[in-house]
Amino acid sequence: MKEKNVIIKTKLSIVIGCALLATGCAGKKPNAHLDSARSVYERVSSSDVVNEFSTEDLNVAKLKLDDAVDAWKDKKSKGEINKRAYIAEKYALIAEQRSTLLQHQAQIENGKLERTNAQMDLRVNEADAAKKAALDMTAKAEQLQKEVQMREQKLQAQLAEISELKALQAQNTDRGMVLTLGDVLFDTGESTLRAGAINNINQVAAFLQKYPDRTLQIEGHTDSTGDDEFNYNLSTDRALAVRSVLQEQGIDGSRIVARGLGENAPIASNSVAEGRQRNRRVEIIFNQTEDTLLSGIDE
Image 1 (cartoon, rainbow, N blue to C red):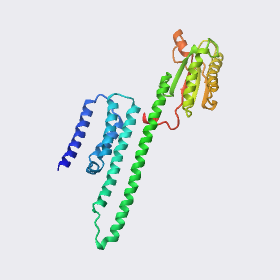
Image 2 (spheres, rainbow, N blue to C red; image 1 turned 45 degrees about the vertical axis):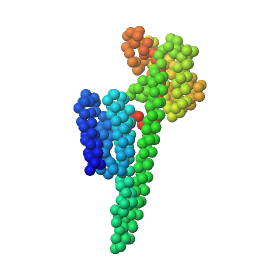
Image 3 (cartoon, helix red, strand yellow; image 1 turned 180 degrees about the vertical axis):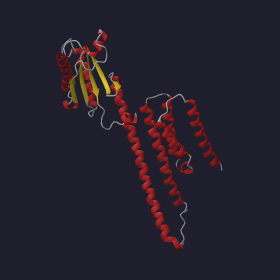
Image 4 (cartoon, helix red, strand yellow; image 1 turned 120 degrees about the vertical axis):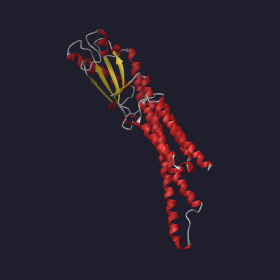
């Protein structure tokens, strides 16, 4: 009876906690990944079998869920909240699978699969089938746990990669992470890089050497001063100059696409000097890798 009371209290605390979360944080935008993780955890944690046989895994799932809720409360990035919620949900499923396995094992050990003389052969077959099912379930639970851990490690590595890009002053855009280099790289009307600009490009080269799966696009831009052909040629030459420096640092040219857009993609008005200066730029767009998990988890 005491054991049942503990389970009832645990369930009640979960319900009260979720209700408080729903009312206390009503002003925050809901998160589908977090809602899914919470729903799975509530279902799994309400199971008597799980509470009897797999409390350790369930406790880990609860810690992971709390971690995701904290990220949501603290208004962390959508990707970070989704990542933590995903991990919490998977740990809850591990708890569910392992509890079923341990229940089967307990039934076998406690002799609950009773045999009679008339049904001896049948019961032996049932025991063998239950043992095989238990072994299969063990393998699936262990594989699921490995997948969760591998995904978590991969996400952490990709978060570190994005942090390094942000340290380079790259900005997150619809096109990916974009590093904008102003017109201080070149003398007016020239495409030869100034000596002081090389250091910035060398930092980009160091990043690409560390992450060999990354590719990038280099785009040259000008203001509207001068004719179209001159601006196009100047922007192209400037993009190629940046590409050349990266290649000199050992970056394979097949990883880099360089092109000029002339005055055709302004980001400010060309009617004022400040706007023209902003438009004279080189942009480096770091493409996402094919296996990037963050792009999917931000959706």
